[in-house]
Amino acid sequence: MSEQAAAAACELPPHYGEAAFDRDPLRALEEGHRRHGPVFRMTVDGNETVLVGTWAGLVELFAGERGRLEVLNTPLVHDLFGRALFNLTDDGHAEARRRLRPALSGRALPGYVPPLLEVTDPVTGRWAQHGVGDLYTAVRALTGSLSARVLLGIAPGDADAAGFASAFERFVAASGALPGRGRFMSGRYWAGRAARRRLHALFARRAAAVAEPGSDSALAGLVAAFEDAPQEVGPLPDHLLALLIAARETTASLITWCLVELAGNREHAVLAQAEADGAVAAPELLARRGAVPVLRAVLAEAQRLHSPNLLSMREAVCPVDLGGYRIPAGSRVAYSPSAGHFDPEVFPQPHTFQPGRFLDGESRGARLWAFGGGAHACLGRPLAELMALTVMASVLHQGVPRLPGGPPSRIRYRPAKAPLTAVPLVLDRQETAS
Ligand code: HEM
Image (cartoon, rainbow, N blue to C red; front, side):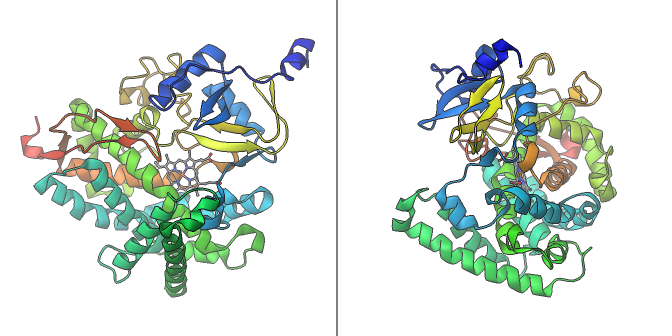
């Protein structure tokens, strides 16, 4: 290390003090990185936080993460989610990922396409007939049904469907209780704990009844993968709840923005519609790499422009060197998945929706970070992308999306990026699409 680098490594990163993070967090992050480079400090939610961004910053962060940075979760999250993946560390975490992954990716995916379409097609048929009062609410409900079907084998008409949905809602509500000791005073916290017990009992019952791996839900494969698992990987019911939660707002967010952008870019919607018709006739295309390129380009551009997650939080468990600075143990560190998505060198005209850049344009091979990276990179990415492609294909097969009230004018960024007010949607039937 040169003398200059060694001196910098003793300093804290610069503080970016003017940012109105709450008002426009993405702009604040973009401006902070423009002024100070990959690493700077900023106050986030009242806490001093080291922000890491840009392509170079994220690569450095993920390369040195294991053993130095841990996911920063509140006591409430530890308490509700037990030994779920994002609460585990070190070898237990790595081993749990190894056991969870096969049922969520690769050869498992083609088997999930028929059940995903079985859930989606009747819903988009109703959207085409009656329109949708609020796109995000409708997509969120659909995403919940898709996750229940593909992760647990619970179809919408199943005897367990209503019980699962109401217990899950109570559990989700508990995650909004106070994060510290104050949670013990909250009714929704205790209701959430009771819901957790009901959900675990339901998972155990369904797990005991599943057929061999290779069935059309992930549960059979997950049960088999955890049969001989050592204690350090945590129990499968904790992981199932984590998968259901991790899938929920994020996937609903991404699908919503795909549909919003298709509605605002009719020429792409019409191009993608031809692929959608083909995919409905031959659904296996949806899980095939390289197939449906226009739909995949729309998906990639929506990920770039509308990353569902705003920030992922870490805590330094020892001093960490980042960007030439020395970050003390105990510091909060955060990265924004979208912090590298607006670099005009990589993505010319970064604020406009241009799926063509992923088809044959200059950004074709560019790395997107919407699903994170490093030790805690999203395990559900293949499944989330399959769900999004399925919904887009099913919608476009019914008609071209249109937003009669225009695109969302106000947006919230947490827990995932979503319109703040209702966005009505209609589908213009194919014969009327010009
Ligand atoms: C568009 C949808 C999704 C997005 C944008 C997304 C994004 C992310 C991101 C950014 C992370 C990393 C968090 C961190 O660094 O702390 C993550 C982690 C995770 N995601 Fe996703 N996710 C999506 C859907 C899903 C789905 C469908 C599942 C499960 C079926 C899932 C399961 C997980 C799990 C278990 C983790 C934690 C991994 C770990 O801690 O090792 N996600 N996700």
